[in-house]
Image 1 (spheres, rainbow, N blue to C red):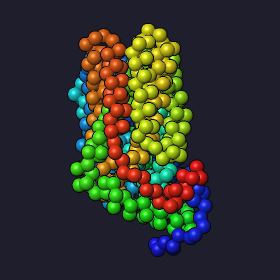
Image 2: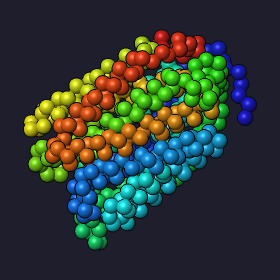
Image 3: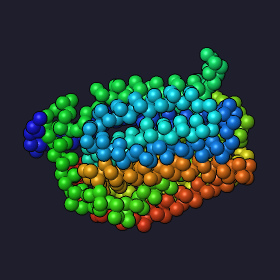
Length: 443
């Protein structure tokens, strides 16, 4: 339908609040479910290894294989989202990954475990970069870091919620002849299928289609987003080819790769690390696992807002990476002191989770149109190979040395390299639209 010219006077912050209230809660819930399905294997590592006969190295390698499948289909998935529309494509992704997660109950040994992890990665490929791309259709640049933070809070909340929920599900061990880990994969796949069906009604492809916005608000939002897309097309890296030739683009990809090494190197081993350190039972371990991620929520929101308010990105990312590195060094030091170990992981997660809320505002600003669809997917695809490297390195060093200390120190080095690398970025001078400047000044 035709959109009227934007009125001179629109309450811009009210428009953003309306868009945020409409889109973020559903996107948030979907990401919670996605993250639980991705990392729930960490909650069942011990019984899974026992029942399937997996060594530490085989478990770490297989857990990380998710990211091989995930990498292979990222770019095609985002291009199809751009062509088909977010509503139908995200619904398809969620339904298929839910079914694949449920089918994981059928694995019987090492190779079927490997195959199931690759299949889950293929099924879920495109969800996260698709959502990041989708938000660029709706959210002006000046609001991106804090909006990203609200969306990405789903990851720590997924772990905080997933730990006790998974522990409760595991009490079904032996019911109907199924192991506890089989019940976990089966029941935690169901919400993804249900949300995929709901997405067909809950999501709106573009601001032009937002019948739930008043016409004046819609006109302002459409005009604002068109202006920002136009500026990205003439500056920064507005084409796919320009992105691929850009050293900045590949450094961003490496920054994300290093961060992902740490994300999954820590989490897919964290319940096991805390269990071995404390000797505690399942509920206590679940609570200790959840605590660092609950505390990280506040850090993510504050850092995202501060970055938007100041307009600065690089030092926010580097500072958070440094904080996370210190946390992991302390965790490696306090392996025999459970309280200090949990507090060290809390410091690390507060820094590391905050990195991503600010980081994604950088490629969102640099890229537009098809370049955004391809570029965001490529950064996510290549970067997420770190999700294979991190757990594998932790598993290999654990098996070789009999301790977690070496793996945690390697991960801290990755964070230090990440922080130094982001400081080498030379970003184009920020040129906000007039509406984006108004939003920032009112923040």
